Image 1 (spheres, rainbow, N blue to C red):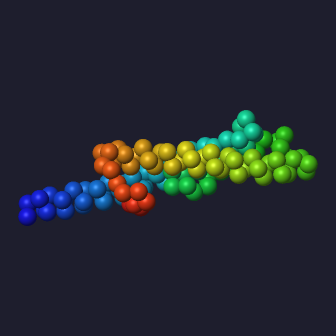
Image 2 (spheres, one colour):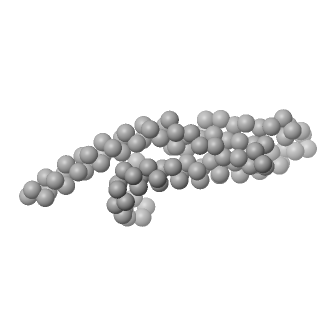
Length: 106
């Protein structure tokens, strides 16, 4: 029974730490870039879009399709970096505890 109480306490601690991590991820920002930096996208650690920067050289009517592709690429780059930040924070939080694939803790 003592083991069960210990597990319950650990679960409560993990839940508290998860809530703190979620709040922290709202303040973390990552930047993705494409086209050598002519297009940049900023996301929060939770994946929310915070900003887009487009170099003036891309604001030509005949560059529209290229710009659209660069926006998608920059967003994908930022999303990948955001996910890496989340993974690193999760590893630190769970102490390397192997969690089942697909388990969403937040």
